[in-house]
Length: 264
Image (cartoon, rainbow, N blue to C red; front, side, top):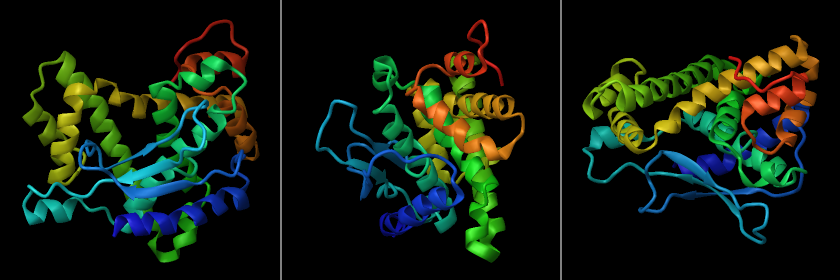
């Protein structure tokens, strides 16, 4: 099942980062993978990471099973394929949230340690999905590379729908049913995920930060490296070294600009 497959995926993903020299990995911590508990299944996958002052606690990458009240077809559609799950493992662990917090928990700034922002955390994790494909992750699966790329694009579409749904539900009169239909018809999500994502949008309008954060990070990388891919590791290490403040503040520091501003 997905939990066992995710456990298998993590060591090769970590090794890929090392082999390709994409980003530094501080510390020796590893993330566990478990099925999410019944009281916390509002998303298909997520990770619980100890803070900088918590000692001896593991980081746990949780994967949610389908809701048993759904019909069989909806349950089957909810279970991710292997390469869809690989994109999730990139997002949640290597080099997404887990690596972000390995750096953040060691940041020199106390603010950066304690207050990792929504756009920084989710923007980074979402950015890494595309970045890893650009770095050659698809080459590791041979003939299935195209399928993996489609999975990455599908997950990007999901985040675009979150962006539109958040604005629609909270500012433009969109109903939950219309949001659910948006996820189905415009972003090609299965019925279970569409229902789940529309419901999440009612109480988490900030889930637009996945797309917004990714776009700001990608723009900052392009401006900082001037298109030189040999500088990606240096960029990633410096970006993560700040912990997790608002991305415009990170941009101001890295680009030595006079004021903090959001640039997409």
